[in-house]
Length: 314
Image (cartoon, rainbow, N blue to C red):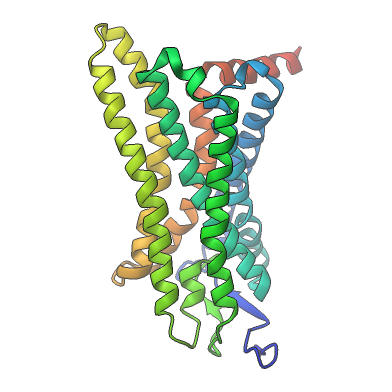
């Protein structure tokens, strides 16, 4: 029996169902998610460690990559441990404040990740279009300010989500048909007019993702023009190769993120299983793929990892 806290009409806890429709399979699906989570944690910690200890990697590209790795660790860890507890141990309850904290971390650090990807696109633009001025334009101070700006933006833009929800009454039904607490999923349990909350959610989505994608698109249009103007075919291939990994990371993040966002609001005919699975993969696949993609494509990081394994084997 679910009970209310008191006159505030806040529930004591919510019930996370996991993956409705796959109740008999989610125990085994969780092993795949666990492997992906372990790869994400080990990979991102390895990237952070290598960049921290190797002073030759204290350049804008690698500093942004370290920020991306930290963000990926927070995003995946904010959901996966609880999700595995649901799938393996049937621990479906999540305390009210824990749910709001999860909402905050998911949305705040999704915003941060989007901002870091934008900063990385700007870095590639400066590196390819102004190679001789790269170090003077993107100084460590500028990199730090960009990182601080995207972090502060994420915290300030998302904080009102939790504040507004915490002041609203909830209906008796406190079942969330998902594997984690997400803003729109929690908002659907509110017994009050939520138009302001929904409008603010749209504002945040378009002001963050819309702005970042616009800067990323402009950066890559300028990069494409600069690359096509290079006289050497080898130089063009090298420049394209440098950007290919970043474009892959951008697509892996934005495609499922936009699908999840739009499905919550407009995709009433999308099967719930498809929606929930993509919502899970949106917070798990990019953190797993990012260190792999950059580890394979970035020679300095790849060499450091190989040296580390060779050193241990010796």
